[in-house]
Image (cartoon, rainbow, N blue to C red; front, side, top):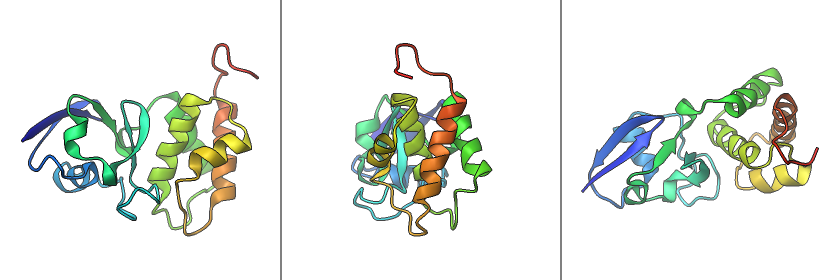
Length: 159
């Protein structure tokens, strides 16, 4: 079965088993290796991508469910929010080993798109599904606050 979708702004196609997880299509067939395999059961967040702008664990997302939809990986993350998050990550040296960081960044972008000025609780809740074996959680939280501070407040949002 052929599945057509948009990947990082460009047309993409997978012709194979419709139950194949999106993660393996991205990594093995479309060579987007920034998205990582961690647990395979949507518990660690290393495989986080955006599906139609919302965070999604690609390890448990059958490719058939993305037909006609927009998938964004760390390689395609762009725009003001993505750039602010990436810059904050670099500025305070968030990664230690780096393995989980593409999932962390994609979750942070998703959070800031939904909640432009998050509280610590907002951050903790949004990032709870992203496990970091190096325990960089304090730096992750700070980077998200730093990125949010660089972004204009959304219209109608509370200051």
